[in-house]
Image (cartoon, rainbow, N blue to C red; front, side, top):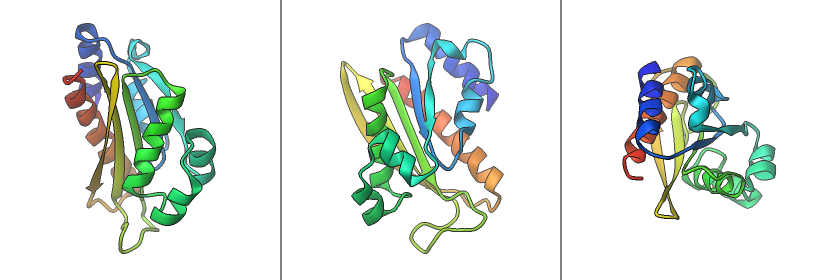
Length: 163
């Protein structure tokens, strides 16, 4: 994963961007990886670890009705989380992550390893939002968090090239 962080640092030399995160199931792991090398303050604005539904609602303005209707682990919640970041951040790259890291929990619709990512990319003064659903087959909580972190770092790099 260190290679992805170094790649982000290198891309920052070529393009002007910053990143802000809203993490749930990764519990700050993405933030930790981003801050693991010197110089990350050049592109990492910060993060909100909104593990509880209450903080998703309170800090990120995810409507309670969205969580009640679709669940905390859903496209809709991931999208609302990343849009909530837009209200508190000036970053060009906005990322949210919500999922079931396990090893317990989950359901038929959202089994252990089901993770939703929200992305907001500012291109020419306009944000473009999307969500991505991944199902990681690992059964270990740590592995699911690591795979989620690695996946989104790759996605961030891919999307920076669009700026």
